[in-house]
Length: 346
Figure 1: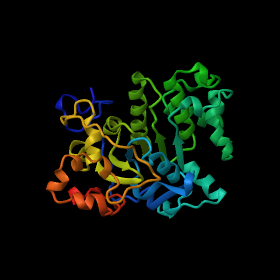
Figure 2: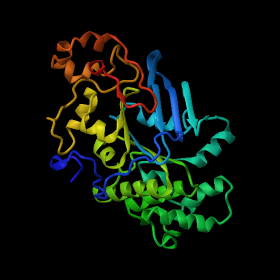
Figure 3: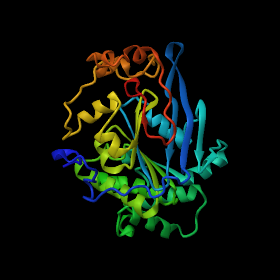
Figure 4: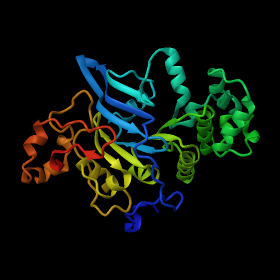
């Protein structure tokens, strides 16, 4: 049962059965932040793809922030840019209050602090490397040779592979999908990072082990104070694991706030449609029609308006907002500020 089934609209984690802990210090300096971030690519026919198009985001220490939205909305590009794997066309990424540098030595130092966990553990692991070699690779890249065996064992233990020595000489094909994902997580933990960016971390796993991996991420947050950005298309996952959520559509954050508030009372029509298809949602399911997001053809006005159920139903006309929806651009949401980018809600 998910947190929304049976009419249970108060926050709990279906993973542990206990209330999700809140971030202790809301005024703490963000560990990772971006301002005015934009990423553009040249596309065929002389067009420009605006994959990320003006994003302000803030990740606090010890927080899990879900970045949610449909495929093609720009969330993976945003995550890669926050990690320094993509260079922004505009805007700035800050780590602990300082702008991210893009010289090789700056990025190498940053990547000890900010680690990526990919959605496909089979693709992330070299089939010719043992578990020990896979986890030790980061230590060797960064020249951290002291106590290598102890560090690898500790990382595997923290990732839930115990006794760690039992897995040292195993190869990826000898492990289950959940065990492979734990090896990937251990490879990130071995460097003692401050931030983990997990891109659809359970999408390739069986339902029976997804909860285990999500519970592991929550435990690491609680025990190590890790901040985590979890990229997902699954709002149910976000409900169970995140402290806050940023909902993304066509390169922009359209709704942002505490996960309880956003998912129990969504304000943006896009968020409402996504929430409506969650199991146990009291709202009637809304199937979004129209073309999916196309970063090379961003519409004027609200970029969701061609698919907006409230425009189709006439609700926007009744509210006197239809003209603005179709023709007036919306302001970009501020970093760390709960809010919604919608003419019907302003």
